[in-house]
Picture 1 (cartoon, helix red, strand yellow):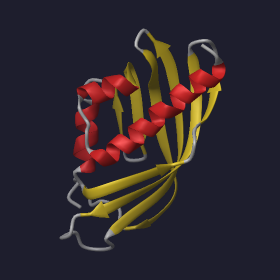
Picture 2: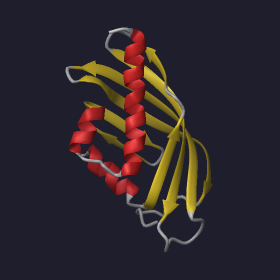
Picture 3: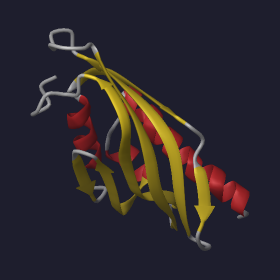
Length: 147
């Protein structure tokens, strides 16, 4: 497999991850199709390690909002070996609060995404995603996921 094909496959993993967050189709099959068994996902306020429970962790985090929309730049993918790669992308995430939430109706965040991927027996899988906040506007979710 050539490097262009590998880079495209890895970039598509990030695209699918972000689109699926908005379509709310998060189950264990979703997590296994995108992530390695030992994957780590880290946001500024929380992190999860391992594919087990990853879908549920995402569902619970997204319950704080009525809707979301994640718009990302194309991923810049650098192969670091035959079976490993790193990626970077920019992301703007719009979070729509539930109607009864006090404050601004939206929380919008610009982040820098860093990630890593590994070729497994199931194909390329994300091994790491981390999100570094660059800017935000609006009301962030209330503690405890209540808004």
